[in-house]
Amino acid sequence: MTWNPFKRSEDKEKSEESPAAAETKPNNGKKNRPTPKMKDAQAAKIRPLVPKDRKASNKVAKAKLREKQDSEYAAMKSGDLAHMPKSERIDYRIYIRDYVDARWNLAEFMMPFVIIMLVASMFITSTNPQITWLLMLVMYAYFFAAIIDIAIMWHGLKKKLIAKYGEKSVAKGTRSASYAWSRSMQMRRWRLPRPRNQKRGVWPE
Image (cartoon, rainbow, N blue to C red; front, side, top):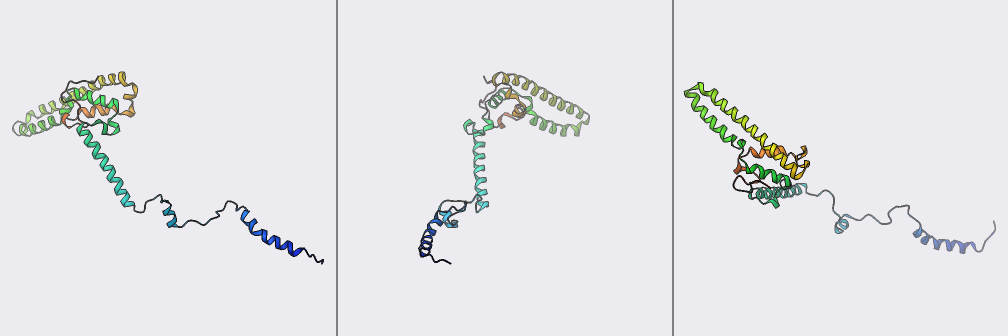
């Protein structure tokens, strides 16, 4: 083995260069710093996706939803269109309400009519049972007349909606027909949103 006097100096230079080379050596995508502690993450405003107290957060969400529903209900009672639910602010739905509220609808008197007929049948059947069939005939006649009146109402309203807002206003997804006949079956003073005009006969333009 040949002795090399410069070997020790070369080894020393390599040992001095190794720390610098280790710092510049790539880490293959690994983190070069430790994972932050929980308190450090909280200090950096890092919050978990799921809240700590779910019951409290659900209670707050329900309270906000309840408050929104109460305000929308109050708006429908007062006639405040700007704060009603979005479904009630649609232009063709406003037109439907105004059209139904402007006419006399037989179906809106169905509930008081049924109550009157039931009370009358209780007194009449006890004294003269033969007239019971006549009361039933009158009741069925009223039901059929109310159905025909609703059909006539929707036939005229549908034409006006198509002329003013197009076919989209009477499409199946809009439920305009059911919205119109359900409102026509409610007594005027109990309708929500409440009628914009106090008297009948004020037709929408």
